[in-house]
Amino acid sequence: MDLTRRRLVASVPLGSALALAGCVESADLESSAGDDAPTSDDDAPGSAGGDDTASGPHTTRPLYERWLPAEETYEYDLLEFAALEYDAVDPAAEPLFADLRDEMNDEVEFLSDPTAIDAFLVFSGGIVFEGSFDTDAVATALREEGENERTVGEFTVIDVTDRRTDAVAFDSSTLVLSERTLSATAQPVSTPSLLETGRGDAPRLLETDADAALLLESAVEARTDDPAFVTFRLEADATGEPREGNAMAWWFGPDRIQFVGGYLFPADAEADPETAAQAADAMVDLERFHDTDVSREGRVVTVSATVPTGDLESFEPEASDQEPVRAGVSLEYDGETVQVLITSLSQGANEVTLEILVDGDVAETVTEPAVGESYTVDVQSGSDVTIVGVHESGTRTVIATKDV
Image (cartoon, rainbow, N blue to C red; front, side):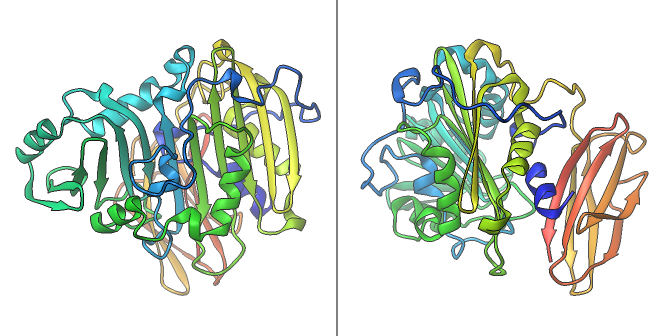
């Protein structure tokens, strides 16, 4: 498998709650969209659409348009985000998000009423919730475990040192969990920087990054209404090299669900519809879907498909009932070698093997991994290092990647 294909097939947004990856056989990719494929707003519940010119933190534009900071504001090797608009999911499809909503509720356990949440954006450097919040109740709950209460613009900010989040900023319609990172591939965003981004006083990702805008538009602009659920993954622009990434957008109507996946390749000549289709298939199992359509424009390949709402019981492919390998690693590059440190491992060492790949080739196999152990592999500048967890059942999970 070449480097581009391996990366695209391996792209999985934001950990266990958003894992959409699996290994399944390819679907029939030659069919075109059928007559019942939803191409307008009619089959979707309420959308997050609004005034495209609005720029503040409390507009009706999607959270990812308003709150994702530009790369010059926050450092990352790999940008990942997921965004969900609760009201845009038809009740018939709500069971698909039960676990994810529970995970997000755990992040704001200080809320007396989690049903007050209308939407969230979780990305590599923080979480933003939108809804209707009782600011007095939030402040009272946070004061019990927080300190250094202050006002930043229209937001109240309280430092909470004994939570995974170091700071919570809030007003009546927004909760911002900042000063944290959800990924080893990114640095946390400071509270002032994130609030400035939301207000439009600091550069935003989609206004400053042409690749990010191109990739996201390939998925979300397939329809005139905003999608209910979006996942996104894009390499940083730090090296100036051509970038790769993927984005997936979902619409949940009472009768049908539609997804559109956009796949960004390094160059027009490398944009391969077959590779993109395999990547989409690995994420969602296209055999469960209908009206599959694959198209290409420049560096981007778009894959779309629909499924009756009642027929989709899980995002994850049904072909495997084995949980993916859950592990954490850190990768440090010193100019000649990469040191891989195992920081967490959910399965027993006798159940899991870790493979360290350099440019697609296995450089080292760790047969009995343990937390705290480290391994060093020789690399050259420009190499791609990937850590893959292999369960004894054969399930393979990409844990981390790093370009050096």
